[in-house]
Length: 185
Length: 215
Ligand SMILES: [Zn+2]
Image (cartoon, rainbow over all chains, first blue to last red; front, side, top):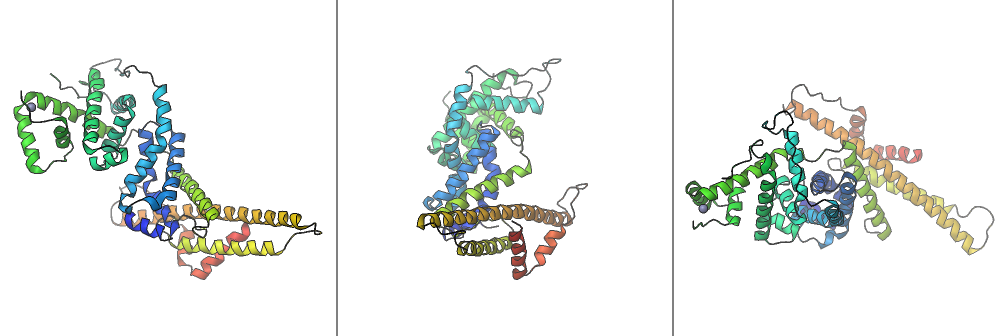
């Protein structure tokens, strides 16, 4: 399989059809990223398409094809901003509702509930913190790349991540014992 | 308590971004310092919870969605390049099937020829002055462009089909190597794939020709 660096070189030399390999390679990850950033399916599909076309148009401005992946994420994140702003305005500011098991509140929170809990908590994070968490925890990006995608310093990326985890921990606390999250004295 | 661990160091430790020596020092501090340990463990729980739902937060769209996205990007980039003349009208290719590029290139040449022929017929009916003639030519041009798009569309469909077949072939190879879980059914190789793979380049062009004449 050809590395991004090589592919980008070939594309810029005129083998433009090879861009298809990059689309195929990254479309699933970019879609997942956009969905995790809170876009709905149609918005994510639209944003992803625009991001790829923009990357194709601006490929000559990319310095070093090995950065393609990080660069593509930042294009997608920028294209998603309008949607995310709108989404942020729609959201009520109160704390998220935590589901409680009706028959037995002491029961361990099931995976499905955990999933909705966490996605609820993610939604309440400010956009910049959410982006850092999604890139680091879901996309497995090293902090150095997270910082690049978000155009922030390395230490800011880590601080944001720390704040986000603290917030989520606070929100999840009411159900923490049931999902084995509780540990605070 | 005077703690040497700030939030960044703690995050570095949590995320495994520290050198082993440094990590050991943090570890030793965490063993000795209760507040820091509590802080670390609460962060770890959230991190683990996130890792636990990582695969399931986003619903997977159907397989056709990826093909649609690929096609949409391919169409958009193709249109851009055609309007700027950058690429000489290449369509994006799916990975793993480079022969399709030959196919696609052959198709573009064929269609270009068809376009030239069509233009060569000139305006139909009595001549009505230069502007009418121009309108006719533009119309023919439009038809040519339309058919190019149509053809491109067909090629994308072909690519999708062939790509799927390639996956089947790979899956079959995986099964031979024991990578496919027992009980998982591997579809039979498509005869279309086998047939296409055996074609000579000039035969491929003929297939393409037949395809083009269907439009
Ligand atoms: Zn301490």
